[in-house]
Image (cartoon, rainbow, N blue to C red; front, side, top):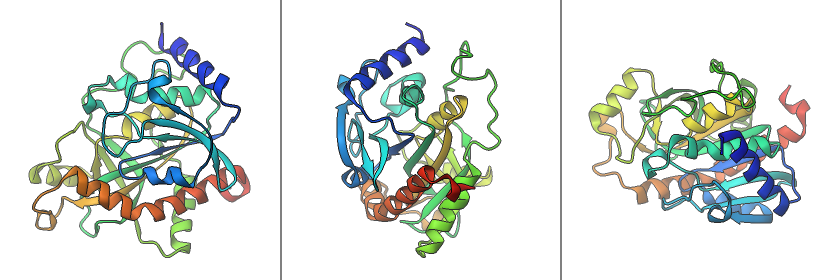
Length: 281
């Protein structure tokens, strides 16, 4: 079965189980799953039950597709995402975004935990992603292009929607929440970076580094879904004297969870704006 047919079959399966038809999807990254508790859930479907979906294997990623109301607005939420380092193909990692498009999603809000490589960053800070550098070893659009999904050569000059970036900054400033705007470096993982790698990512223009998000963004833009993404800075990798002696997945989850109230506030504000377009003009 070709990608387009798999996408349609999966969307059809979901539509038979869920009456909601939201315009907004949210992907909850490492340590940020508690945002799901803010959703008035109408339906939830474990990934293992969804045709053609991979299964999340990483601690801190829930493994369910959620439909419900957040701040009174209909949303689809991925409680847990997939990573290339888990052994999934890059097509599988980004497949849920394909299904979102078939379900009618117009806006994708992404979150992740990332290592900070901008000198003035602190653990717990938020970074609004304005651009990315893709250093993952595979590209989700490699292979024959299906014009029903999108163009052969998608434009990525404004992959991260500038209107959402501006509105996100206004929300955070209004609530006096410190934040940065920067470039996310997407790598394969699963190892945390060496000091020399952190330095390299800084030298090539990166401000934070992580193991997700980029494939999802590429596929979303391929299908003309608007994208916003935010990183929680869960550790500092550059300058090297700021590095912790040892980084663990548990510490990353803990730092992301501590910053979650700020992420929740931001996501709620952006969702309200999607359903009140005048706020995004």
